[in-house]
Image (tube, rainbow, N blue to C red; front, side):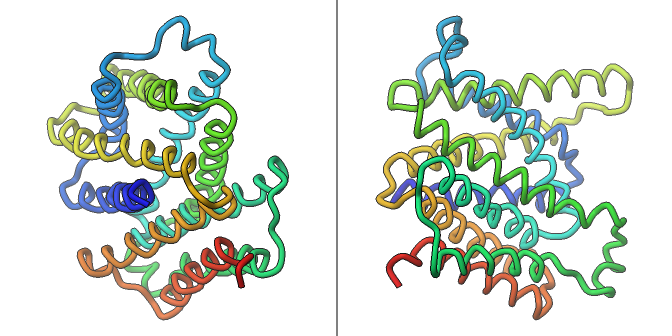
Amino acid sequence: MYYLIGSVVLTSYLTLAFKVCERYRVNIFQAIIFNYLTCVITGSIVNGSFPVNGAAIHTPWFQWACVMGVLFISIFNIVGLTTQKIGVAVASVANKLSLIIPVVLSVYLYGETVAGWKLAGVVLALLAVVFTCYQSGANAGERRRGRWTYLLPVILFIGSGLLDSLINHVQKLYVNDENRNAYLISGFLSAATIGSVLLLIQYATGRMQFAFKNLLAGIIIGVPNYFSIWCLVRFLKTSPWQSSASIPVNNMGIVLFSSLVAWLAFKEKLSRLNWLGILLSLLAIYLIAFGDTL
């Protein structure tokens, strides 16, 4: 239960942190790169040493850690853009209702069952995404969004679902108490390496300038980011439920917590349809998680 609470609170913090970065005009791309460098350092401190070596590179999980790193940096940038262009609630729901993808893959890969109320929850979740992401003409005008902006929740939905599926799959097959931290650090190192190369190119061409506030934001985001994934992996490993239920339970808490904090702290305007979408998302996740017991 502690791992579940940690995953919910820390993951919600990450989404909300992007909103704060917008207020202080922090360059999100730079903050994300520094965040992953911070994750590598944090993980190495927790591990007691830097665990990525020649032996780790030849393990079956290392290639998956590299793929995870690519998804990390891609999705984190999309989360940042979605949060700033559309809002915290939309980013959170689009991100976390992607649970549909790992649920479907759990049925295909592990023979888990999704029928009855669980199946109804999957269908309801799709409807909830549409309602939560819908913006009225007035709100859209206020934010001056381009048409491409509305693709962000869709991309986030698919990408986050694939990432959750990858983390779940690898921890089922390859991760144990001995290599868990090395696996996480390898994923963060992959993201940090890709991002650092891109960032250095931006610095060299003069397209970006270094600012200390971007580094500070990366550190403030990075430490909780590392432990959010650490808690998620531990929760999936120790959860009493099947993965087709564990991921929805985790995501239900994130959607509720982050949306309510955004409404209270940032005064985000949500239409009645948006609120209906959030309520439907909670109902959908509940049905997916506990449909077998109804």
